[in-house]
Length: 324
Image 1 (cartoon, helix red, strand yellow):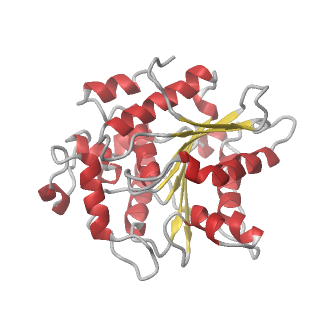
Image 2 (tube, rainbow, N blue to C red):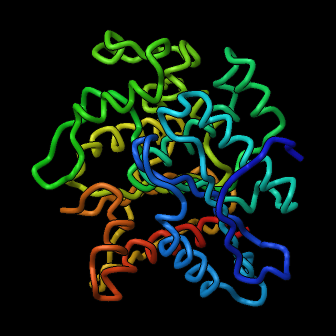
């Protein structure tokens, strides 16, 4: 068990029983704001909806969620947050005695970025950093990754302002520089092409959308795949499309954009073959929506169906793909 202190919020349907599935959630906020407590209602509803999916023989009978309270910029910069994410994952596995096959990495915005960075570190992308390599040593891949509007490339040239979204591409570049540190991503690097080789510099791990190695994405992919969910009007949408496509290409996968029925829920068709199901990328782009829309809608809309629309979608895809 990790001896390092781990801070966060622990939610579980039945605290008297061992969790059957754990969502490991990393909050957004540009690495410099936010906390798990801001997301508390969102996270509680997520656990409740998972529990509703359970049957007596289901792996979701007693779902749990751990939301890490990681250090914010400027108190700490990369790789401090990534090291804390890896320590938090080890804590879940050791303290809760949960197998990696029952863990789903999740997060929104900068938190989703940290989730992907951690998967890359577990896959060996941190080999040039003794700290990262040690923190990731022995950690197994989780079953699934649910990424809400991941900030894929900290300074991606494709990031473009949208009249509908509330994020600004130039401000994001500055946030990315503050997080990654001037020694790791310089202004010149922010304006030029990303590194082509895995582990070329620390910034390539901090900015996972810059990783182009097919072999590394194959190793970083959770055993049951990925779910990208984001809005079509996002400033960061081009980077998400590119990363999803890059992972699909690495896996030899074909685009699986979830069809939506008349009631706007997902009609998910999951292959019955376990091996085929295990290397899958689900891309869920919501037309007309903005950054991290499932979180935004829960807080800013009033009708129950509108508030739960994103979370219901997330839970359905997650439970279908994480079935043994």
